[in-house]
Image (tube, rainbow, N blue to C red; front, side, top):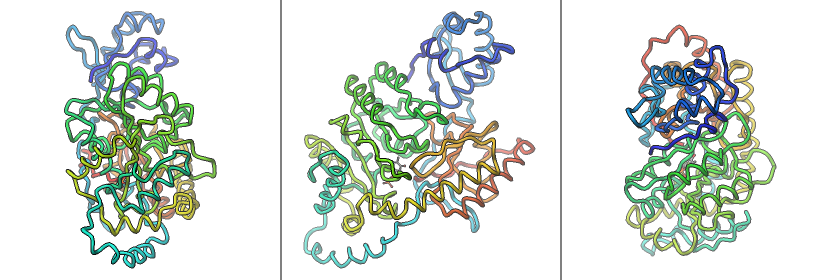
Length: 480
Ligand SMILES: Cc1ncc(COP(=O)(O)O)c(C=O)c1O
């Protein structure tokens, strides 16, 4: 989708201009903003005259800056239409996030997946579920909206979080990703627009667009700052693009770890309402808070029409493949119809296991201390061994979003593969690529592995400038 950038907004994003010389400072600032996805690809940049006025520089300066930007591959000039943001071909997003287990050599550390081992008590819950199974075997086993006992437990979890919910509002799905596929199947039509954060979770982007919808990326605010969402930008995009849906990860956003506060939730929800845009809220990481601070109220408490998806994957275990949809009662029948066309229902045994395990606080409390230790061990190792890599320590989620001081994360990730560390570089998370200064480093693995991974990262990083000629290896599939 094409959109335009107001000159005042460009001036705010550029901030203080390095004037030695000014055209070069402007070109580099724009390069960074486009590369980081804060100016989305295909955005029409303001005319040279308006930028000159907004920045207080000569028109010549802007003409030269735009010229250099085009030469560097970060903009294209279209006859009669203006100058548009783009990124060099090799930094475009790798469209190969096929789900599937990648092969990892012995001794290699796979940090492409932000998910940990099963929560303690999972095997015992399976044993209890097997014992309960005979009561169900005389039935046909198809439960398109879910196992009633599990629907009731999930509804009770929402009620405890301050969002009254009946069991009938819950549809159990085979994981949050599958839940998103059901929602997209019900709601989206070819050519629809879906607002997504960029960077964001790539598999959700894939699930939401299978029916031919198109993504509109809403750049997040400074990933090293504390504000999270750029609500001015989101409101402008909603007005301009009028997307049919918006996909929102308000709770420990993947990959940045941002948590949306209640004031932001209220403002975002009001903007969606004004634009007539359906909120699809992904709460997969909701229960991963690492401090004792209370969580904000669920996004749907501010947006009564929102459809929310959740998951047992981070709370209990990804191997269960159980997630759910919470929807306004009026939409449930259509959701179940869409679901029946997809997979008829989720595994009954796994639903029994989740019904045994699920109790957000009790379950996650047992792992919170462990995950916090892992996060801190990773942060400490990075600070000691790679002090010029920058990140914000998130209070939840399962990964750090790390900025390299220079160079390409894609190239570093390719070199690290050969050193036995598998990581997802920034462009994997961008709607259209960009983010090549960023790496997502999950802390879902044991501390010793994280420390060893950082040791290998430091080695690869120090060797990087001497190995610029190498071709990036093929990108690996990203799962969680
Ligand atoms: C934001 C987000 N949504 C969905 C998923 C997939 O969840 P599930 O395993 O329930 O399909 C993940 C996995 O990491 C995620 O981070």
